[in-house]
Length: 293
Image 1 (cartoon, one colour):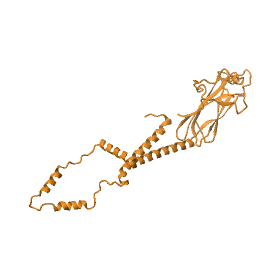
Image 2: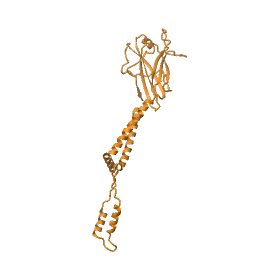
Image 3: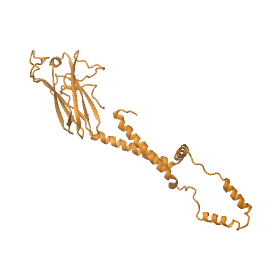
Image 4: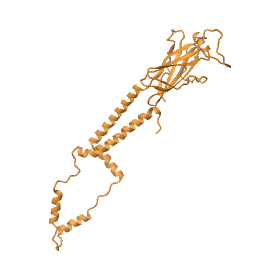
C-alpha cells in the first residue's frame, strides 16, 4: 500500500497496535483456561493406579483361557478409532471460536488496542509540541530609489550592478527544535482595478527569474533569519503607492523538522503603503496555511 507521507506514520502505528493486539489475544487464549479455573480434563489422583491394579487382577492365570470379559475388552481396544490430526484451517477455526467465547481474551485485546491508540495519540501530541514551526515574522521594504522620478532598474545589465531596492523577509522558528534545510520562495503580482483581490484560480507561481531566495540553512528554535530578495521592477510598487493597483506579495517556506518530515508553509500578503510602518502588509484570506509534503 502506497500512502502519502502525512498518513504513512499513522498507518504504521495502527499496524503495530493491531500486531500487538493479536499477540495479546494469542497469549490470553492460551492462558484463559488456567486463569478461570477450567482444567483440561484432569485425572483424579490414584485413578490411574487403581485402574491398572484392577486390570491386573482381572487377568487370567497362566495356562488358562481368558474370560469373556477380557476378550471383549481386548476387542474394544483394538477397534477403538484413533484421533485424527487437525488441519491448519481447523486449528484456526477452533482458535477463533474459542477466542470469541473467551471474555478474558476479548477484554485483553480491547485493552491492548485502546492502550496502543492512546500511546499513538500521546506520541503525536509530543511531536506537535516539539517540532519546528517556521513562519513569517515580518515583511518590509528597502526602496531608496522609489521616489526618484524616471529611475527604473534596467532590463539588461551588462556590468556590475548592486540592487539597492530589496524586499525583506524575516523568518522565525516558533517551535522548540531546529528547522533544517529551510528554503523560501517569493513573488509579487499587481491586480487591477485598485481594491481587487486575487482570483480563486490564481496559481501562486514561484519567482522563476530570481533564485536568490532559494536557500538551505538551519533556524534554531526561537531564532530569526532575515532574508532579502531584489526588486527588479519599481513600477508595481509605485502604482500601489498611488493606489492604482493592488499589490500582492506571496510565496512559501519549506523546511524539515527533527523527525525528518518536510513542511510547506505558504503565505500571501496585500501591500498597503498608505498605512503606518509595521502595518503595511496584511495577510490574505487564502494561501496562508501549512501542510506536510
